[in-house]
Length: 172
Image (cartoon, rainbow, N blue to C red; front, side, top):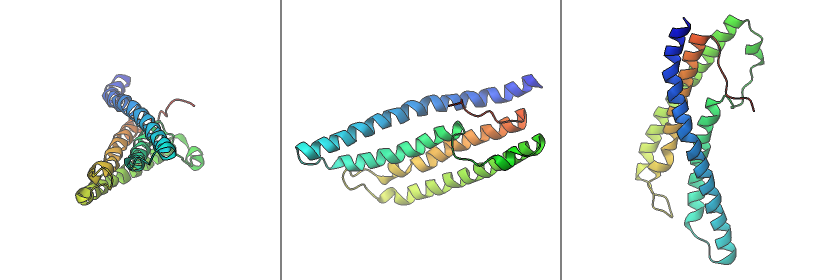
């Protein structure tokens, strides 16, 4: 049974670690870029005339950072949760409750992927004010991050079913 468990979870966990290895540096680079753009905005306003595109770029970076970092928080189990009722249940019922809750989250995330994709398509004609960038690129983060969280939730469900307990992210 343990060998079957490892063979099921190993490829899922490998993809999860791969996504994590991509997302962490992307979020870090976006944070560094956000700091640089805001610094440029402040310096340009104080010393020169304001650089017009900095406000727009900083807003778009913040949106992308928020959504992508939320996927990392989701994967590590860092989103807020009230678990005292579930934790008080017997082990088997606790497992069932966690599976049901994770499936509900998965259903919500699949819905968010679909709605986010539709919204992205509806806004595809719109261009940003300063950069003239298609708003499709700005709104693309919604279905993208929801799809990544779907994968994480799917891995959690499989892990709950196979192992019987969720392994949370590393301790703070």
